[in-house]
Image (cartoon, rainbow, N blue to C red; front, side, top):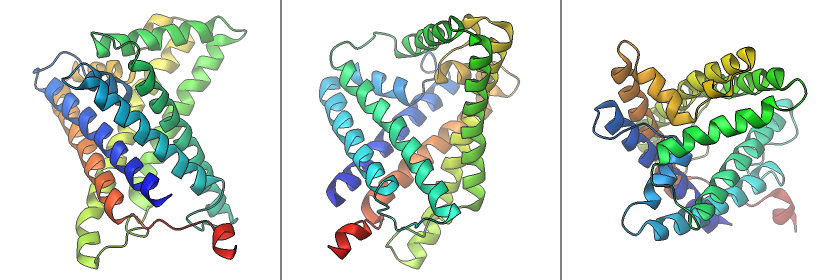
Length: 265
């Protein structure tokens, strides 16, 4: 379980580090189009040894999903059943679902890797919006999805301010003090990055126009086109990189404990 968790944190760090680097290059007009985590995985797939990267990331993200299951279902972090503990475990469960979908994306890209990851990500967003709009009250469902995306962003921003990120690290006090800002910057960047996509999805629902929806990278491109957009995009990219680096720190120093049921057995 410990090996799977550490491998999973490393895989998460590699995905965010890759996404941050691509966004940074996009803000400097060195590559065409920013991408999110899914787009970053697809971008890795078209690089040399791409299939090897995809396979390793798929395995690593699956390992991270298994660790999230141990945390949320079996309470590996010993959060307990208090309101705060249950809320933390629910967040870990939804996080696990997200990384599970990323793992599926990595394995599916072994079969077909799009030549333009940014364009494929944007088209996927439009297709999903059309499916939602085709349902009864689909426009309001799309608005609800947009609000949920915004809620995820706000939750990450709140976590950046309130969370003690050194609580689960088994490193020296000095090292913990040095790496904690990486986590705060990373969660802040993740949270703020979700808000443009939330606004686009809500607008698409209100106007019943699927074409207004895009992928995560497309939402970042919309920010890039605004006044001071490249600077904002560059700052967000550095935040993603910080989150990736902190994930590597967690891969090394995260305290991995067995659930209470295993301890008592």
